[in-house]
Each structure stands twice: as C-alpha cells, then as structure tokens.
Image 1 (cartoon, protein in one colour):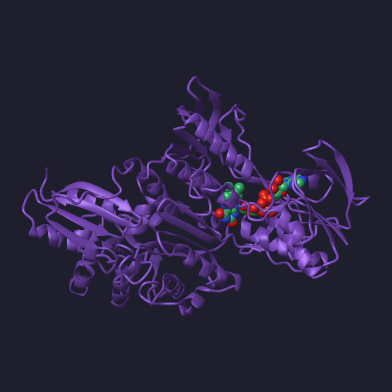
Image 2 (cartoon, protein in one colour):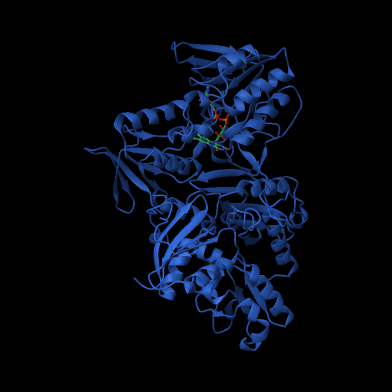
Length: 639
Ligand code: FAD
C-alpha cells in the first residue's frame, strides 16, 4: 500500500511513524511544505521568552530519524498543491527547485493543520507584524527583536497564543499591550475566572485593552502605530497577530471533499473524509464535542496526536475513533498563574440553551498547615442529573491536576456523585484529605439534593432588600475587607443566639468569604424553618465577577522590603478568617507609626488589605506578590 501524508507535524508525523510500526511493507511518503517536520509549535512562545534557548529543542524529530528508523520518505519544502481524486494522484511543488511533479497514492492522509486568522484591517503586511505558527515565524520574530532592539509590542488577540506571546515578550523586557475584542482573555474560561488572570497580567505590567478592536496598522517614523476602535493610537516596535486559527482546508475544498463547521474537513468517526481513499486528522478537521455531541473546532495538540495515531490503524482497517470526541482539556501559564479547563463553559451552555447548575470552591492546593499551600479557584458546571459538563480552575499550584481528574471523569461520563467518591492521592505536601475535586463533588451534590440551596454572584444586584435579608456570616474584621451591598453581619458563631434578629418571613441570602461558613449558616437556618440560600463561592466569587480592572496597575515591587518592620505575621496557607484575625491581633500590639509585614496565600489579599486599611484608619505602605505568596506592609495609624 502506498500512503501519502500531507503535513509533517503532530497529526502527519504521528500517522507516518505509527503506520510504519503497524506495517513494515507500506510505502510512506510524508510531504511538508516548510523546512522542518515534527516541531514543537506549543514551545514557540517560550523561545521568544528565552525560556527555551536552543532552536534545536524545538525540533522534536529530524527527517533523518524518520528515514533511518522508520523508512519514511520525508520530503520537506514540498507543498501538495492539488489532489486529483479520480486518478488518485497529487501534485507536489518543490519549493527548493521550483519543480512541480505528480505522485500517486493508494491512501492519502491530510494533516495540514490550521492557519492564523487574518486581521480584517489595513496594514497587516507591514514589516514588524508577525503571526506565530512555525519555527521560521518564531525565528523571524526573535531576529527582528534583536536587530531592532524592540522595546514595545502590541499583541492582538487574547487566546492561548496571544496570552503566551504577551507573557513571553514581557519576560523578554518589552512593554506589552494586549488588545482583545471580547470582554475577557482566554475564551474557554468564564469572565469571573478570567478576571484572576486579568489582574495578574495588569500587576505584571501588561497593559490590557479589552472590548477593543484594531482598525488599522500604520508605519510611523519610529515604528508602527496601531489604531484602536476606541480612538487610541498605540505606538509599537512590533505587533503580534494572534486572532485564533482557521482549518487549512483549501486543498480539500478544491478537491471537492465535504466540509464542516468553520470550513473544516468533514470526516466520519474513523477520520475518513467524503472520499473513501482520503483521511484527515488534526486542526484541519472538525471534532465531536464530547459534551454536546455537536461538530466543533477544538484545535489542540493532544487530539491531533491521538488522531494521527488512530488513522494509521484505520488505513489498515482497524477503525479506531480515538481522538474524534474532544473535551477541550487545556492549560496555560500566565506569569505566576495557571489556568486550566475542560468541557463547556457557562457562556457556551447559555448560548446552546443547555440546562445546567454550577458550583464554585476556592480551596488550598494542599493541606493548609503544610507550608506552601496556594489558593485555587474552581468552577464546575453540571446538568440536573449531575453529569459533569465542564470545569475551570485558576491558581498557582496543582491547577491542571484538578482539571485532569475531572477530564478523566468526563471521558467516562462521570457525575458529580462520582467526584464525591473519588479516592485521590493525599499527603500534606500534595493534597488535602478532601481534595479540591472532592469539594466540587460535595458542593454540587448538595445543590442537586437540595441540601444547600444556592444563589450566584450575578444574582446579587437583583435581590430586593425589601423582600429578602442579605446576611454575611464572616467575622467583623473580614467585613472591613468588603461585603455584599446592603448586607447585615452576624458572624457564624453567633448565629444561633441571634436568630431573633432575622425576619422569619424573609428568605435569607447568605454569604461568607468562600462559601464554607455560608453553607453551615444555611444548614442552621433551614433547620430553623427559614428559607436560606448560600452564595456559591462566597464573597470571593462575587468580587472576582465585579473586579474593577481600572484600579489595578503594575506592582512596583514583587517583594516587599523587609526593613523597618516591627512585627512579621505569616498567614500563608491559612483559611479565612485566620489571616485577617492575625492582622488585627498583630496591629493591636503595635504603636502608631510601627509597621507589620503580613504574608498570605489568598490572591485577593492585597486588595483586601487596601479595603481593610481604609476602613480601620491604618496605612497600606506596600504590597507585592511572588509565585502565589501575597505580602503587604501596613503601618499603624493614618500617615
Ligand atoms: P500542524 O501542527 O499545524 O501541522 C500542519 C503542517 O502541515 C504544517 O507544518 C504545515 O506547514 C503543513 N502543511 C499545510 N499544508 C500543506 C500542504 N499543502 N502541503 C504540505 N504541507 C502542508 N496545543 C495544545 O494542545 N497545547 C499548547 O500549549 C499549544 N500551544 C500552541 C502554541 C502555538 C504557538 C501554536 C501555533 C499552536 C499551539 N497548540 C497547542 C496547537 C497545536 O500545536 C496544534 O493543535 C497541533 O500542532 C495540530 O497538529 P496538526 O498536525 O493538525 O497541524
């Protein structure tokens, strides 16, 4: 059997080597338009940030290895420019010699990937404007930065590649502005989760322009000017366009193969196209969304690699659909933070009209009493039967671990009740005995069983204070760091003794910091005959949804200065209300003008301290953050 493969990276190279492992006799020819095969697209942004320092590290496999070990005829700089289905022939253009020739096939595999979307604006072909897809694109960016001593960049698009490029250009010392048309970066996340990352980017010095389009790119005397939809003219030494990708289906379309969503190549579950001798895999095809069952574009390396592996077997009649059903498990680093997600998010469920519930938790990455625990914010969506529809997690440590577990549960059609029962590895340095995934299961099951009626952050403005009581059961020091508008405060531990302060005719909408004490309070009230609802994820989720990005700027220092400190308090890993209680206790011991240094692991701690100082007549001198440790220096009294 003679097999021609178009595209020599994830899907194509994987198909070629697997086919050789399965069939020693097959004639395999791999055509790659570019200079390199099997390169690490996913590593390209880190080369710009100089974390990956050697170009060779980006080249996962060399043609020589495929030729010697796998007896694959690798033809780089060779673009397949036409498919003649009736004759089972392809036309190939050799970009080195300029020659064009034809090659026959018994079976053809298309793995041409996806191309960066074009910006519908003038000036996109000016020098200094780049997309990031191939090793050569990346080397060109690197070269341009060096030669021009570039000091500023505009990144257009806040998807994975845009965010990774913004971070890496910033690590390289450039002043970076990220422009995004939507109201948030990273579309797989919902807004309140993305806000954690907006804050991180702003604090790390990235200038964020959300809800903003690019209208025009112009050459200026000093470099480039990016004209934005809000009228701003941004000067920049270079521009990266990262608006997402479109399937490279031109060849398939020309050949009359059936197409699917977004112009992707339509295949059956065995990756066979509408021509029985032609298969297609990777970013160029549409997948089946594992949650909705609909055709969807989910261009990721994992599915492309699995599909390449499967299709090799399918050429030999094995009929595997491994990789066709995709849940979109993904992870991205944003400076000190990690964001991971799987399945559908709330925006998508709303758009599709799917019935869902949701739950939020904000636990530690491992037992709080063991040093180094960092907070993770998690959100999970599930249907009325408890089937998991999607999950998102943002934090510093252990983030992708939670999503990997949930992705596995989803693959096996798991429910929130399964998450309650999951037995996961535990020892203090690694996890909590009730892991974050268990907590998602517990809270979700409580919601479905009616044990914990909930309301959500977006419901808060709709609560009619004439008809309902809004009650925060946090401690008074915590209330000084912020609470729901028009709420009253009865600390949880006083609640049983102060029930007479609550109108039994009015439903009580409860909150605390992260939702834990609110749940206990709801259980007390429900058993005393009240109608009670707990704010899922507590005030933390509310404040994330309502984060005022305009108030966040670059942090002057990543680490607070240690001089002039009278008292140091370590509240890392402690759950609320312990950190603020420690601050209050410490400040009581100080005289006016003396300073307290506090470190904590709650990302909102810095802004909480600002609010607390405002309310208590103390002064926030400095705050900083470093890999999930948040510090503040407070001075007793107003300066
Ligand atoms: P590709 O890897 O794009 O390979 C297609 C190849 O086909 C290309 O080399 C192209 O030159 C060649 N080709 C196209 N047309 C022809 C033709 N007519 N003739 C010959 N050759 C042709 N995914 C993740 O899951 N995690 C990540 O962290 C991640 N990071 C990424 C970062 C960047 C900068 C980029 C660009 C992508 C990233 N991805 C990531 C996506 C991931 O790389 C892709 O999903 C995956 O590479 C798709 O594999 P593929 O084989 O379908 O296509």
